[in-house]
Length: 480
Ligand SMILES: Cc1ncc(COP(=O)(O)O)c(C=O)c1O
Image 1 (cartoon, rainbow, N blue to C red):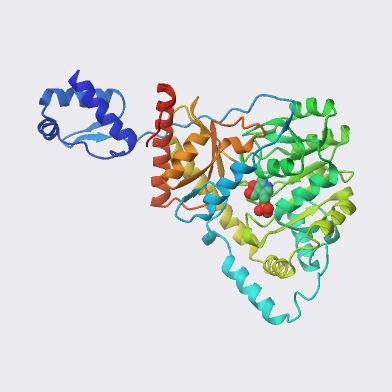
Image 2: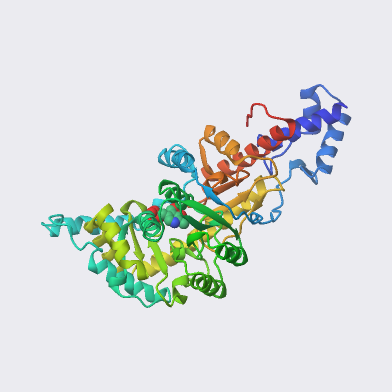
């Protein structure tokens, strides 16, 4: 029927974004003249679009594209249990995401990076140049191999706010949390050993496991409650893993904060089965409802190795991280000396100076507020523009969203098509050892929702729709 093909045609324009929510459709008579059809045909087509929920009539004004109501999308489902040790292979895919991150012409929804305007970089860099000017002999020696004492003192002081009682000598300063994670893995396991990790998990963890020739045993994690402790217990009972590596405080990509009871149980399980827990607390300071305690707070025998950094709160480029290695102190120390000897002192001093200045807590509060509102805004945009079968997390901290795409829609297909439109996203396949999250995406909300980001999310929604239609129609070239 003529009116149906006209309605289809208009529906596609709406789906593709040529006509957007709130736009006025052409007048009935105008469209009839333009398309060479009768007024009745246009009226029936508009009626069809109204029935489909795409168009609304405003009294004495005309037909308008309906603004999509914010349907609250469901949360992603935790993966099913798979207790086998998997050889990991994510490094190549990670390189592509990191490359897109460096291209400033690409809309940055891929890597978990924060708008520089939200970080105190000017103050830090001023401090850096002051230190360089005042300390003529800086750089003349390797300094304190475990890290500049003033920084370790500041970290021990901050640990009180995390609910921990630590001494400056408990810390070893590292080149970002990534070095700390690598040191911890080497300290507690050998090549071919298996490490229990959350599923999905941060791809850097999988990269480290891959590069060290270890294997991953993936334990399902829920967007609300974090690591599934029953599944972990089953894995530990098989006695096949050398360590557990988890991020109980707003981990990446799910953003769940485990309850105190669950953290206590997690540490108990590690004690019961005599395995170390590498605790990645990089997002601990960015929980929305106040600073949660790390699982280390329940450790009684030094089996938790706590990892952190200032990459998500102050300056990712400074590469300042740390590890509190507990009973593995000596081992981690000797690995650190063997690998990088020490961490550049001037950067540690600038961070120490900033932490001692008293402005850090104010900065953190502001940053948390901003990130939370960016996450909420991005969430509603996804609800508005992605197909209704999409699922998206409602994180308790951090600044990334984990999106489960409609059935059959490949995250890699969406990522590639999005890149052609200069939009970066991280495909879900990077967050699982065996690429099992191919129908997922991770979307970073580190930048304010400017017009450029609004357009990008709308465009992404269209790309997902198109990839979905292409999948339904069978494989052929995608254009969006
Ligand atoms: C969960 C998690 N752990 C560790 C890191 C690495 O942190 P860093 O940049 O301090 O090495 C990241 C970085 O994105 C992360 O998301």
